[in-house]
Image (tube, rainbow, N blue to C red; front, side, top):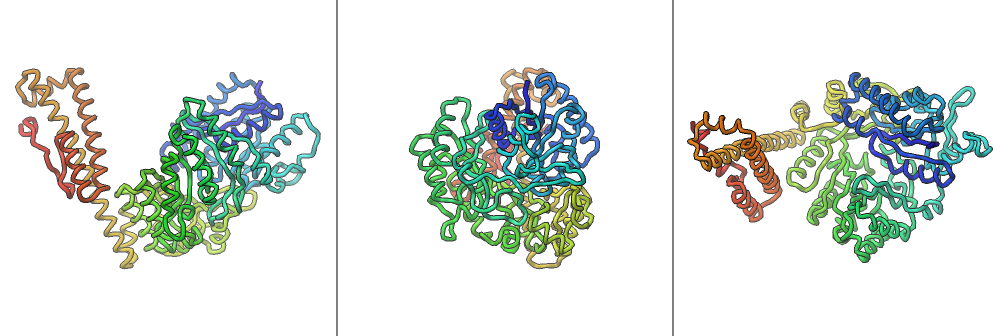
Amino acid sequence: MTEFVFVSLKGRPLGQEILRKELEKSGISARLVSMDTLYNNIFDKGEMALSKRENVYKFREGVKSYLRLLRKSVGEPRFFGMTMFDTIGAKQTDFVVAQEIKKAFPNSTLIAGGPAFNSNPRGFLRESGADYAIRGEAEKSLVQLVKILSGKENGRIEKIPGIVYRGKRKIVATKAARLSLEEIRTAEFTYLKDGPVAITYTERGCPNACVFCTVPRKGNPAKIDEKTIIEGILALAKNPEIKTISLQDDQFFLDKERANRILDEIIRLGLNKRFAFDTQATVESLLKNGKADVQLIRKMKRAGIKGMAIGVEAFNNNMLRELKGGRYTKEQAIEVLKEIRKFGIYTENFMLAGGIETRARDFIESYYTALRLEQKGIAHFYPSVIVQANKGTAIHTRAEKENALATMNGRRVGAVKSGRTGTRMVLPKDEHLRALFVEKLRREKERVFTSADIPHIVKMAQNTKDPVALKYARKIQSMAGQREAGRNLIERIKGNLMERILEREMKKAGIVISRKSAQEFWKNPENSERITAEGEHLYQAYRKLFVRAHTQKGIPRLRTIQEMKKITGAGITYNYQMKGIRKTKLRAK
């Protein structure tokens, strides 16, 4: 029988796999299970879905069913483990799972961990219903706790680093657990297989301490021995199912000498031909003497890095000074992204809507720049989000003093009471931008600004009467108009392509073309399926080339337009006007 079962909501976290291996080394059988299919089916619409009671009810019922099935495969485990997050929706998801585990397995002990217990350990233990929690790096502490609770070892729980537990009168949290640099340096290579992807890491920690971040290990990262990393990748090469290696380090490129050595070994051993790699980075780690580090980016390409997640956060220097400590500028961020794009590396970039000192003109400049760069095909950006203020972060401390905290309903409030949990958003001082944030939260209980918010953003800029904000509002309106025109154009072309194929097939069959005969011809499933498949294929080819043309200039754009015409028979002018869409006989009739 499995003694310890780790439960997760989204995939299988690498941290849980590390802990599973530590338990197994100590003779404690452990297993990972995931509810990601259930979670994604119900909460696939993002944060708005979390606020709907019917979704939470459906999720709770789904968890109950899942746990009934789980019992058949694991029996009655002595322990359950969960990773909890200090993000929006914890009460609707993590807490629900914890509560249902305690109901379904009343004799089991639930031990939680994760970011939630780094920022607010007492509040999350009190409200989640977990029996114990561990904050910090849990490898040693979890093994100690499990051995003591199962009677395999004598000891006092309060002496274990990082333990959060219920004392006689209050919840007690011991000092956060932390492994030594040597323990991490000599750690074994650990990975988690997710389909064709192996997820792993080479170091822990981040030296930047951004004002909104709750990373547990702050300061210089603790690094695993480079030889161990390369040997681990070589071992993965023996598994034909693994095609991609995903490095989950926060700051893989910050220590450039180390990053270069690892990339050199990957190239020397031919691992760049065996695997595609993806990783994470920050803008400043890709700079050298204030400019994009082209030499490093070129080597990244040679080493097989295909994709990167980058915390750009903003394209405005006032915002970057507050949120990122001014470690790079808007201009440097754009330069880095352009250089990465030149080498064909795909990036996904995270954006924030602003901090306490963000002005309306700052927000709209950043918002427009991200839209523009994406339109040019330079990078992909996640929508800008209102900053969540977690307890213990610098921005939470300051926002509390400045009366700049709000609930997800947009109501201005103070900090969450001690020993309780709750979500707090950061509001800017700027009255116009603050009104935009509050309206967004009240209207949708959603903190993500998408293209659907453009009318509200433009209206805010108009209310400011600020010439800079108005300039960017006009640019956004123009861009939105172009995007809508582009969508309408390719939709018209899709219909035209279908009509052309239909006419051609009717001619082949010797049928006189008319709307009535076309309808009869289409009723035959064999005809309609064949025409639809070919039309969809041509449409996707056209759409791909259309998007490519938007990212080009001069001769390359003209060549792409010629290719569109050659493949599909329909093109566009250099300025994206319709061209080559002849009127079919069906349309004429």
